[in-house]
Image (cartoon, rainbow, N blue to C red; front, side, top):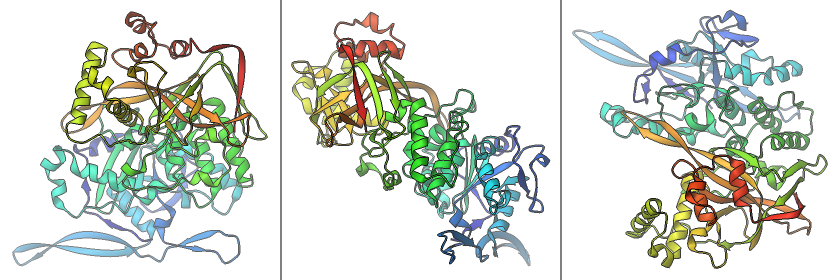
Length: 571
């Protein structure tokens, strides 16, 4: 693949971020080697006294990818110098000035040097030149340091050649301020780009605090919501991917990383594991995996270690593909992973953390990767399939629904229209679970002889009539967006709550499968008024004092404790 870089670039940011981009600092760490941009020479990393930048790109951007003839199955990238730099030169003829377009065909490294010069980058970490690809030990050692390399850079340059705009109206000031059209259009292109499909680029962007996206004639500077104080546009990059797992109070969770990792690909399957291990370096320090490790063993080591530390891995449901503009295949289905990894489902991109009941303990068997859960409390419930997800959005019905919800939040009870029209009530839950988590309602639970206010939705990867709900509270953090001129930013966070769901295995009487989540609801007002609907014995004043997840679990399962613990073996 060969790319074109037009030096006449348009920023899609509503506000001018050039000064901020030039002043951002990196960390104290320096890579072993860097490229000095001025003469494109490899120099020791400590030479970059004022910091350095990193590069994130797809390998196939740099030329023609060809397979070797030596039977190794390895690939090489051959650069035939067909990358194009477009320059615009002013010429004077007689009394008039004319702008002439000049095209120069170069190799990939020459194109990168021009990009760096245009954006005031003095030192660049570029893996192809800064890692000795011929030495396996050095290469492995450098790969294990990549999280440090990207985390300590001033910002990362992201090459997305698919990103370009032809319509100059996209960049009119009024367009930029009224709806930020150019940025929204750029985000759609980025989401569908080749860069968004690769395992290494996932690690690179998650470790970066700031990124500068370079398209053919467009650039976009983005930074993390969690690393700075100034407002920024809320998107998947700023909210979830950038600055993932920051060492001091990081916001990343395993469910977030897997929401992307399951959809990524790599030239070698081991690269996916290296990228995941580096992403979670703050909790998986010292994990020993190399290219010589059997790939199935490598996957098992990672998932066993991460689930032992973070049960938000159980936060997954079903993704409704109808509402996505494009669909990427789940690559993790190629490996024999247990159901509790969520491999058959979809991990939402919201940050989630987990709290387990004081009565619950668990471990993962090294031999068969089964998760053994032992607990004294659980729900054994009957559920009903919900087939008609979005059929009630015809004119008038949704407005009636909004009025009913408003009445409930102000008076604490549902109006009769909700009681008599169950389908509208169910549709409100379908809308709620999708809004808060981007997963979709497939089933619902209603206790017999209870009012409709006690219905709760489930998002399951397979159909069943009965299931088990475990006392593991999954707390999801949802940003409140505030709107200012000319950008959106996060004002605060609210929370939604889920519980993991398992069912009996179809192949064993003693084993179970993890199949999704049970949605409790979202946090309303200062704490958890949602509990009032769940448990009539708890009054409003008592609810307002409930702040800790353990207290919530005690209330949810207070009538479901058993004298002796039961063991669930999840395959």
